[in-house]
Length: 231
Image 1 (cartoon, one colour):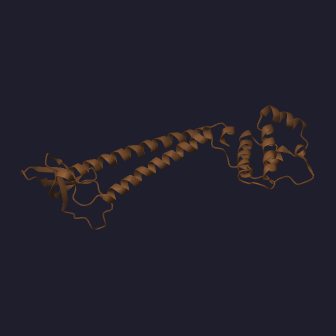
Image 2: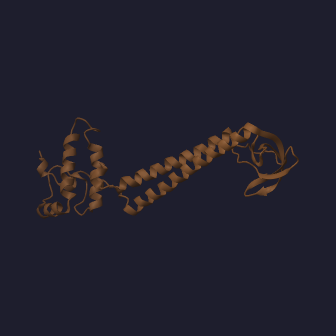
Image 3: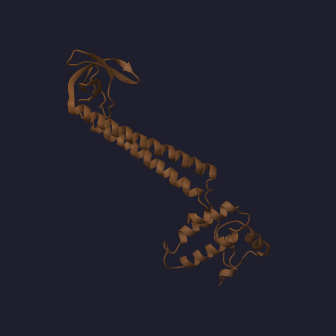
Protein backbone atom coordinates (compact mmCIF):
# COMPACT_ATOMS: atom_id res chain seq x y z
CA UNK A 1 0.00 0.00 0.00
CA UNK A 2 1.33 3.43 -0.91
CA UNK A 3 1.77 5.94 1.88
CA UNK A 4 0.88 9.59 1.73
CA UNK A 5 4.55 10.48 1.45
CA UNK A 6 4.95 8.19 -1.61
CA UNK A 7 2.24 9.93 -3.60
CA UNK A 8 3.14 11.91 -6.67
CA UNK A 9 1.76 15.40 -6.07
CA UNK A 10 1.13 15.97 -9.77
CA UNK A 11 -0.78 12.70 -10.03
CA UNK A 12 -2.83 13.60 -6.95
CA UNK A 13 -3.99 16.79 -8.64
CA UNK A 14 -4.46 15.04 -11.98
CA UNK A 15 -1.85 17.20 -13.69
CA UNK A 16 1.19 16.80 -15.89
CA UNK A 17 4.58 17.82 -14.42
CA UNK A 18 4.70 20.86 -16.72
CA UNK A 19 1.37 22.25 -15.46
CA UNK A 20 1.25 26.01 -15.03
CA UNK A 21 0.55 27.79 -11.74
CA UNK A 22 -3.01 28.75 -12.79
CA UNK A 23 -3.70 25.13 -13.79
CA UNK A 24 -2.44 23.92 -10.42
CA UNK A 25 -4.63 26.41 -8.55
CA UNK A 26 -7.68 25.54 -10.63
CA UNK A 27 -7.17 21.79 -10.15
CA UNK A 28 -6.80 22.25 -6.40
CA UNK A 29 -9.98 24.31 -6.11
CA UNK A 30 -11.97 21.82 -8.16
CA UNK A 31 -10.77 18.78 -6.21
CA UNK A 32 -10.99 20.50 -2.82
CA UNK A 33 -14.60 21.45 -3.41
CA UNK A 34 -15.43 17.92 -4.57
CA UNK A 35 -13.58 16.08 -1.79
CA UNK A 36 -14.24 18.43 1.14
CA UNK A 37 -15.40 16.39 4.19
CA UNK A 38 -18.53 18.53 4.45
CA UNK A 39 -19.58 17.32 1.00
CA UNK A 40 -18.29 13.75 1.22
CA UNK A 41 -18.50 12.59 4.83
CA UNK A 42 -17.07 9.15 5.45
CA UNK A 43 -15.26 6.89 2.99
CA UNK A 44 -11.88 7.94 1.65
CA UNK A 45 -12.94 11.53 0.99
CA UNK A 46 -11.13 12.90 4.06
CA UNK A 47 -7.87 11.15 3.18
CA UNK A 48 -8.05 12.24 -0.45
CA UNK A 49 -8.74 15.79 0.72
CA UNK A 50 -5.58 15.69 2.86
CA UNK A 51 -3.57 14.40 -0.11
CA UNK A 52 -4.87 17.15 -2.37
CA UNK A 53 -4.14 19.81 0.25
CA UNK A 54 -0.61 18.47 0.82
CA UNK A 55 0.04 18.40 -2.93
CA UNK A 56 -1.11 22.00 -3.35
CA UNK A 57 0.99 23.19 -0.40
CA UNK A 58 4.04 21.99 -2.31
CA UNK A 59 3.11 22.72 -5.93
CA UNK A 60 1.32 25.98 -5.13
CA UNK A 61 4.53 27.48 -3.75
CA UNK A 62 7.12 28.24 -6.43
CA UNK A 63 10.15 27.60 -4.17
CA UNK A 64 8.74 24.39 -2.69
CA UNK A 65 7.80 23.17 -6.16
CA UNK A 66 11.32 23.65 -7.52
CA UNK A 67 12.75 21.72 -4.59
CA UNK A 68 10.19 18.95 -5.08
CA UNK A 69 10.83 18.74 -8.83
CA UNK A 70 14.58 18.43 -8.18
CA UNK A 71 14.14 15.29 -6.07
CA UNK A 72 10.89 13.92 -7.51
CA UNK A 73 10.73 10.34 -8.71
CA UNK A 74 7.45 9.49 -10.48
CA UNK A 75 5.50 7.14 -8.29
CA UNK A 76 4.86 3.65 -9.63
CA UNK A 77 2.70 0.78 -8.54
CA UNK A 78 -0.91 1.84 -8.37
CA UNK A 79 -2.04 3.75 -11.46
CA UNK A 80 -2.03 7.51 -11.15
CA UNK A 81 -5.33 9.34 -11.36
CA UNK A 82 -6.38 10.23 -14.88
CA UNK A 83 -5.55 13.74 -15.93
CA UNK A 84 -8.80 15.68 -15.99
CA UNK A 85 -8.89 18.83 -18.11
CA UNK A 86 -9.16 21.84 -15.84
CA UNK A 87 -11.25 24.76 -17.03
CA UNK A 88 -9.17 27.93 -17.49
CA UNK A 89 -9.28 30.49 -14.74
CA UNK A 90 -10.63 33.84 -15.94
CA UNK A 91 -7.94 36.51 -16.06
CA UNK A 92 -8.05 39.73 -14.09
CA UNK A 93 -9.15 41.67 -17.16
CA UNK A 94 -12.23 39.50 -17.65
CA UNK A 95 -12.95 39.61 -13.95
CA UNK A 96 -12.84 43.41 -13.99
CA UNK A 97 -15.08 43.46 -17.06
CA UNK A 98 -17.59 41.38 -15.11
CA UNK A 99 -17.42 43.71 -12.11
CA UNK A 100 -17.73 46.90 -14.18
CA UNK A 101 -20.45 45.46 -16.41
CA UNK A 102 -22.34 44.22 -13.38
CA UNK A 103 -22.10 47.64 -11.75
CA UNK A 104 -23.53 49.26 -14.90
CA UNK A 105 -26.44 46.79 -14.95
CA UNK A 106 -27.03 47.33 -11.25
CA UNK A 107 -27.16 51.11 -11.65
CA UNK A 108 -29.45 50.74 -14.69
CA UNK A 109 -31.78 48.53 -12.68
CA UNK A 110 -31.93 50.95 -9.76
CA UNK A 111 -32.53 53.90 -12.09
CA UNK A 112 -35.30 51.96 -13.82
CA UNK A 113 -36.88 51.16 -10.46
CA UNK A 114 -36.83 54.85 -9.47
CA UNK A 115 -38.38 55.87 -12.79
CA UNK A 116 -41.11 53.25 -12.49
CA UNK A 117 -41.89 54.38 -8.96
CA UNK A 118 -42.11 58.03 -10.07
CA UNK A 119 -44.32 57.04 -13.00
CA UNK A 120 -46.70 55.21 -10.67
CA UNK A 121 -46.80 58.12 -8.26
CA UNK A 122 -47.46 60.55 -11.11
CA UNK A 123 -50.25 58.38 -12.53
CA UNK A 124 -51.82 58.00 -9.09
CA UNK A 125 -51.83 61.80 -8.62
CA UNK A 126 -53.43 62.34 -12.05
CA UNK A 127 -56.05 59.65 -11.43
CA UNK A 128 -56.96 61.20 -8.10
CA UNK A 129 -58.05 64.49 -9.68
CA UNK A 130 -58.00 63.58 -13.37
CA UNK A 131 -60.61 64.66 -15.88
CA UNK A 132 -61.65 62.02 -18.45
CA UNK A 133 -61.22 62.98 -22.08
CA UNK A 134 -60.98 61.35 -25.48
CA UNK A 135 -57.78 62.39 -27.22
CA UNK A 136 -57.38 62.19 -30.98
CA UNK A 137 -54.31 60.68 -32.64
CA UNK A 138 -52.70 63.38 -34.78
CA UNK A 139 -49.27 61.96 -35.54
CA UNK A 140 -46.16 60.42 -34.00
CA UNK A 141 -43.29 61.81 -31.94
CA UNK A 142 -40.30 60.06 -30.42
CA UNK A 143 -41.59 56.63 -31.36
CA UNK A 144 -44.92 57.21 -29.61
CA UNK A 145 -48.24 58.52 -30.90
CA UNK A 146 -48.95 62.22 -30.61
CA UNK A 147 -52.36 62.95 -29.13
CA UNK A 148 -54.53 66.07 -29.12
CA UNK A 149 -57.12 66.73 -26.43
CA UNK A 150 -59.49 69.57 -25.59
CA UNK A 151 -59.87 70.56 -21.94
CA UNK A 152 -63.08 71.62 -20.23
CA UNK A 153 -61.90 75.21 -20.61
CA UNK A 154 -61.66 74.74 -24.38
CA UNK A 155 -57.85 74.69 -24.46
CA UNK A 156 -56.27 72.40 -27.08
CA UNK A 157 -53.26 70.47 -25.81
CA UNK A 158 -50.94 68.03 -27.57
CA UNK A 159 -49.19 65.29 -25.59
CA UNK A 160 -47.41 62.03 -26.31
CA UNK A 161 -49.34 58.86 -25.57
CA UNK A 162 -48.49 57.50 -22.10
CA UNK A 163 -46.30 54.40 -22.01
CA UNK A 164 -48.25 51.16 -22.22
CA UNK A 165 -47.41 47.43 -22.49
CA UNK A 166 -49.34 44.25 -23.03
CA UNK A 167 -51.59 45.74 -25.73
CA UNK A 168 -53.16 42.90 -27.75
CA UNK A 169 -52.23 42.84 -31.42
CA UNK A 170 -54.85 44.63 -33.45
CA UNK A 171 -56.69 45.68 -30.32
CA UNK A 172 -55.59 49.33 -30.13
CA UNK A 173 -57.78 52.15 -31.38
CA UNK A 174 -55.84 53.89 -34.14
CA UNK A 175 -57.85 57.13 -34.05
CA UNK A 176 -58.34 58.05 -30.38
CA UNK A 177 -57.27 57.19 -26.83
CA UNK A 178 -59.15 57.47 -23.52
CA UNK A 179 -57.10 59.60 -21.10
CA UNK A 180 -57.26 61.35 -17.77
CA UNK A 181 -55.62 64.77 -17.59
CA UNK A 182 -54.64 66.95 -14.65
CA UNK A 183 -56.83 70.05 -14.74
CA UNK A 184 -54.08 72.19 -13.22
CA UNK A 185 -51.63 70.99 -15.88
CA UNK A 186 -53.32 69.42 -18.92
CA UNK A 187 -49.98 68.11 -20.21
CA UNK A 188 -49.93 65.65 -17.31
CA UNK A 189 -51.95 62.71 -18.58
CA UNK A 190 -52.36 59.01 -17.92
CA UNK A 191 -54.30 56.22 -19.57
CA UNK A 192 -57.87 55.83 -18.43
CA UNK A 193 -57.43 52.04 -18.81
CA UNK A 194 -55.79 49.95 -16.08
CA UNK A 195 -51.97 50.12 -16.22
CA UNK A 196 -51.19 47.19 -13.91
CA UNK A 197 -49.73 45.06 -16.73
CA UNK A 198 -47.45 47.91 -17.74
CA UNK A 199 -46.25 48.49 -14.18
CA UNK A 200 -45.60 44.78 -13.56
CA UNK A 201 -43.61 44.51 -16.78
CA UNK A 202 -41.45 47.51 -15.90
CA UNK A 203 -40.80 46.19 -12.38
CA UNK A 204 -39.74 42.84 -13.83
CA UNK A 205 -37.28 44.60 -16.14
CA UNK A 206 -35.84 46.55 -13.20
CA UNK A 207 -35.54 43.39 -11.08
CA UNK A 208 -33.78 41.47 -13.87
CA UNK A 209 -31.26 44.27 -14.34
CA UNK A 210 -30.51 44.40 -10.60
CA UNK A 211 -30.17 40.60 -10.29
CA UNK A 212 -27.96 40.39 -13.37
CA UNK A 213 -25.79 43.21 -12.05
CA UNK A 214 -25.39 41.58 -8.64
CA UNK A 215 -24.51 38.26 -10.29
CA UNK A 216 -21.80 39.75 -12.51
CA UNK A 217 -20.33 41.79 -9.64
CA UNK A 218 -20.27 38.72 -7.37
CA UNK A 219 -18.63 36.47 -9.97
CA UNK A 220 -16.08 39.09 -10.96
CA UNK A 221 -15.30 39.87 -7.34
CA UNK A 222 -14.86 36.17 -6.59
CA UNK A 223 -12.26 35.74 -9.31
CA UNK A 224 -10.40 38.85 -8.19
CA UNK A 225 -9.86 37.41 -4.72
CA UNK A 226 -6.55 35.65 -3.96
CA UNK A 227 -6.56 31.95 -4.83
CA UNK A 228 -6.46 30.67 -1.25
CA UNK A 229 -9.43 32.79 -0.22
CA UNK A 230 -11.75 31.33 -2.86
CA UNK A 231 -12.23 28.07 -0.97
